[in-house]
Amino acid sequence: MNYSQKRTLVGRIVYIALTLMAVTILCVTMYTFFGSSREANSPNAPLDGTDLPADTDGISDTTPVKPGDNPVTDDEPVGGTPDDEPVGDDTDSQPTVTPPAKDWTKLKVSMPVSGLIVKRHDMVNAVFSVTMNDYRVHRGVDIECEMNAEVLACAYGTVKTVGYDPFMGHTVVIDHGDGLLSYYQNLAEEPADGITVGATVYAGQKIGLVGESAIIEIADEPHLHFELELDGKLVDPMTMLDYSESTSVDSSADQDK
Image (cartoon, rainbow, N blue to C red; front, side, top):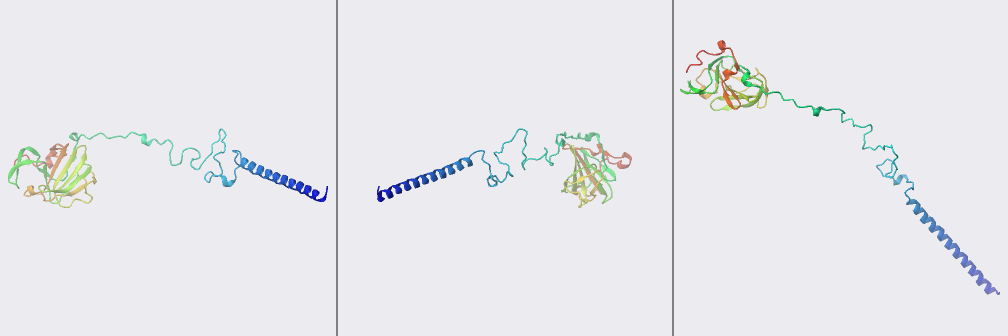
């Protein structure tokens, strides 16, 4: 074998060796790459800190829970009922007690002003009016007293009206509940302090002063015109007023004037 043939043979051997080395390196590289990818995709592969969800505080959604374990999250109170939910509070279950309605036909109200009843209630027989110079029915009672005498609420209630009647003058109406209303008329212009619509008043509380604002009774002596209404109908105040016949009623109150 001459020199040229030897060099050709050696060249082929080197070429084959280099080819085998390249193939070997390529196989090792591919095996390493695919093996790493398969291990990373395995469900049992460990997670590093960057792969954890931000809101689990290190607890993975895939972390297995053993029987009896009770993982606690920020959304669940520890120890059961939150502090702002009282245990055993059954206040809402208590029944609402409604007080019985008053039977005003069996109760008395106090005199709204100190004085004599000089004109009674009469919706059947006409009563003579000095001011109008005629006979007409009388819706309430007239209690004669001094000008600017204090007018008092006849019972506990709520002020319903504070206003002016074109015939009976300045008026205060009190709702006592259970159908009873009381009317105070022929008052002075200014009501007492705190007497406004919706205000609560007690029996004997000052609501105003006697005036001379009732146009159709202006010729009479200073007096309070007082009415009572029960269930939408006028009633005789004399049947409900707590008064003394000997000191509170004028003997001429039953006579035509």
